[in-house]
Length: 241
Image 1 (cartoon, rainbow, N blue to C red):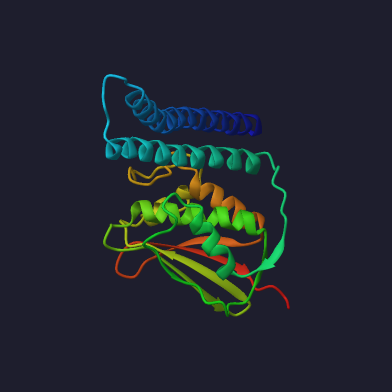
Image 2: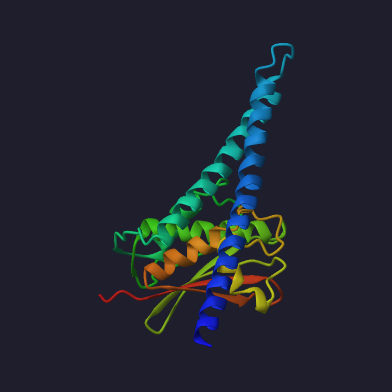
């Protein structure tokens, strides 16, 4: 009986590994090839000697190249971060900082610089003992995911608050939300949950964010946004002063 159970468990693990490999290949082939194709098309157009492009048209091509390069950079960074998490190669460089210091840097790293977001993070919040660089990456991934799902007329809100001994940051969107049964799965690598609009099509952003937050002894959880949508909650213990 035990041998059968062990064989069944091993078989299930192999099937899961095969499914993950298939998902990785599908995600990488699609999500890396799409921006590469856009970059290649824009460069080929600019190099075409038979067409006299106007300055406006040239600016459009260059803008496409820049945007798609940003997208590729983000995808590759998430792939590298996920591999570091999976092999346990993450080294923390801790410091005591405030969310009010980290959030602006996280937003500045986004392709659009965080334009159009509503940020409510008071300087008076207790400080937290984290790796600021990893926290910036986690927040940037969470905000990018929310921005990809939020309707254009409903900006994502970033709200900081303090509870007893804890400091929380909420990233609040009014997008379609995620069913309760899918919430655990959304943090696994290469999960898309049918959202074709998120910039992180490869499905790594939230997995990396959760891995980083938990490595810093924090929590990343999900709530419903009142009135519809999803709220991601980052929580850390307040640093002892």
